[in-house]
Image: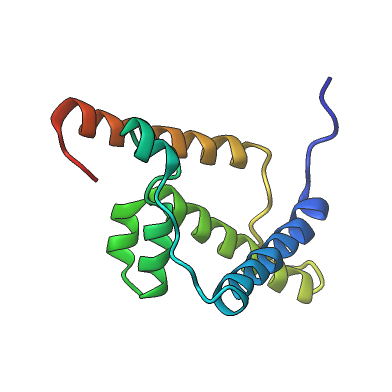
Length: 137
């Protein structure tokens, strides 16, 4: 049985809470833990195949250094997700500050499905290139 679909009423605060939690986790990692090295992917280490998240950390580091092309090469879905989330939060915030007038990007229940699909297609393409043609990414 399906419940009621998520709307902007739930998605907007959830996005800000998620952003705050990620910022808190980063600050904890950086300052309380002293920025320890991020370990390699368990799936890659044991099975030598790419998982749907492989390259995501490298993409985030490349973005932090302003290397957008490198970030897109490392993990396109991570960059797409960040751009979509930033556009959603920015347009929703401006829309709400203006009294809900004008244009804003509104949450759609298909977004998570499309993003998961993008992550899985990225994983499939990477593994076909790696296992089929020996091209590491």
